[in-house]
Length: 362
Image 1 (cartoon, rainbow, N blue to C red):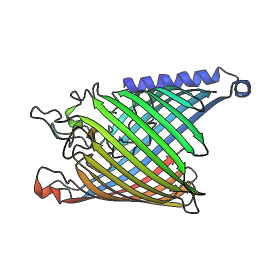
Image 2 (cartoon, rainbow, N blue to C red):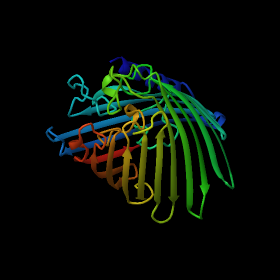
Image 3 (tube, one colour):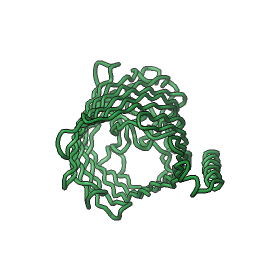
């Protein structure tokens, strides 16, 4: 309730500020811009071949409106996250892990940030979008860092280069107490042909003060005798993206990560091939293979669409078709196993997940 009230007040404040100005004069003299944007998701999901549990079917509706204002180099934004699903995912029996990074029936503040952006530097503070292009292996796209970030960038004939430092606390949409995250990242975007670019990203992530994370968010990570985390999480990550903007846009992605705090079960591998685009062409086909060890990263913040956040191996196929300039329809199939399960009979047990999604971006 309190989150909904805060969101309404914030949206009202931005609307009042925009009405208080003369739009014509402001745009000419101060380069003022006000934008109302929204993302929406309609999803139907089926999970099959679960161990001793019955098959699961559920649907989800998500709406993410946001209001952004900018005056030259100053930016301000606020947004909400509204979810409604057929299940009540937070009402689980005690001790069971919550596999989702959202409350299935919730309205909350999603974004609330202020920032400065010039040609060479971007500074953000508050609750904002992840500024580094990490994959779902390390960071769920539903989550927002809550803290501050600085990105320095430059460009020239040899390519584009950027470096980002980010510090955040309490960034999960659910209760992660005072957990902190430090992210240092650098990216080089290099031309390698008339329509081809090679992007190299190296990152370091460190999670601190994680002992107070709500038990259901500990998920598959190895636990100590007292029930807390058995290890620290200091992760080195490297991503290579090769993009071609020809008649059929193509992207190849290879990522490798290592939790330097452990000697075993600390590696992650992510490989993807993307053909086409629902924005630049009519359709898009993506295949992803990944193998993520149990302690490769702090599982609470990894992507949740693969059922397990760590300790898994699996495949995903995603066929997307453009429905309009602002929407696309996706059919997704996943085959996944819990390769690091404590029980050996579960390690070779493959489950299947199917989804149909209608995505909007306005």
